[in-house]
Image 1 (cartoon, rainbow, N blue to C red):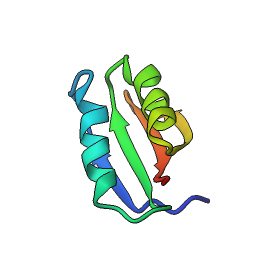
Image 2 (image 1 turned 180 degrees about the vertical axis):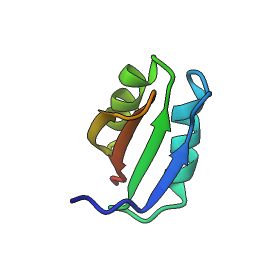
Image 3 (image 1 turned 90 degrees about the horizontal axis):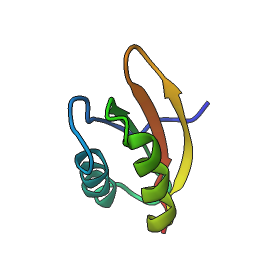
Image 4 (image 1 turned 45 degrees about the horizontal axis):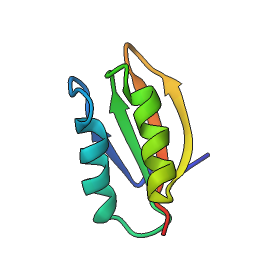
Length: 77
């Protein structure tokens, strides 16, 4: 089980806000920390993995929750 360091509630926000808020939140976290993002923007399915790839973060996966998605990101270098 992955230990969540922090959760970002990006529900109701549209592209690119979930990713921009994730970038800001990750900056404050130590390397290796895990950020959980809650989002309901359909574009986040593409944006979050792309953001991880571009920013050298590990995309740990996405799951469907009650009417939204949950994304896990491990902060990289």
